[in-house]
Length: 73
Image (cartoon, rainbow, N blue to C red):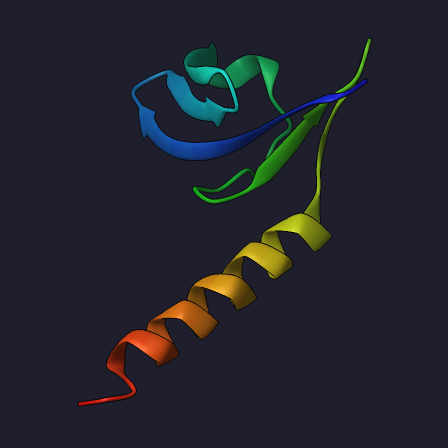
C-alpha cells in the first residue's frame, strides 16, 4: 500500500507533510521538483509522485465548503 501525504508548508530546506499518522518533516531535495503547498504526494516503494487529481479534488471540496459557509451571508 502506498503512503500518501499532503504538503502543509515549507520550512527552509524541509517540507512539512501531513500524513494520516501525523506530521513529518522531509528534506525537499528528496521530493519531486516543482512541488507546492497543498500537493498530494504518493510514496511508493522506490518512487514519490504528485497526485494532481487528488489535489484538484481537495481544492473542489474546499471551494464547496467555503461556498456553504458563506452562503447565508
